[in-house]
Amino acid sequence: MSDEKKGGRGNGKQRIRLPDGTWGVYMGETGGARRRPPKRSSSARSGIVSRYSLTPEERAEAERRKREIRASRSIVNSDKYKKLPQREGENVKLYHRILDRLRMWRLGISVNMENIIKGLVCGALIIVFVMLQITVFSKLRPFGAIPDLMLPLVIAVGFSEGERWGGASGLAAAFLIECLGSAGVTLLPLLYVPCGFIAGVLGTYYVRDSFVIRLIFTFGSGILRAVVTIIYICINFSSPSVSLMFTDRVIPEFISTFVFALLPHIAAWLSFKPFHKSRAERIN
Image (cartoon, rainbow, N blue to C red):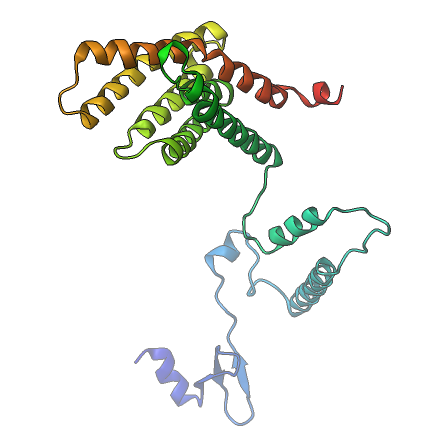
């Protein structure tokens, strides 16, 4: 034990725990409890205000300010959830109300009307040229073969609208033409989708979009279409004649596809031209 505790016992002093958690010295029956002043912390010595460095009046003032701040915050929070008055006679379309309700539910649904219209136009072009290929050109057979109108159409969509639209239209065109006109092994998606995607990449990032560039790319894609035709002939026939295969099927199909490729390119250019205009040009 320390000397202070020994002296405290002899003089009738005793350390006691006060209700507020601090220690005091009991002075006997007449002396009462004497509270020891708290030690100054390092923050108080450095000038930082703490609860030990405030007087009782300053503590009461701080508590009063704290209550006022809490009361003002509660008023602001209550005003935040008040509903705003609706405008009378405001003409709001039904689908705008539905979209606003979906945004309030935080479903993350957003609708771009321009992309929807563009997708409908692209689908209409695919259907029109598929019908032309399997009805009109299947009877006419220019140059002795049916031209592949889907390949230049996919290339035209890719050059006009980018790689995503080119790839998607290539997949849709291959699926539709295979469902309507062929059976067995399906190789057209492996041709249409890369051609549409690469055409979109070239037209967007590397070359300037023009009819000359489109025709050059269509010519190269026509060579790939001829390779696909040769694979089809080899699968369906056991021992085909090479000379007859090229003279009767491959070369006529390549020439007719390249000659009539101008129709899909012109139709796609005229159909997607309004989407490339600015808002002021559309209004005028």
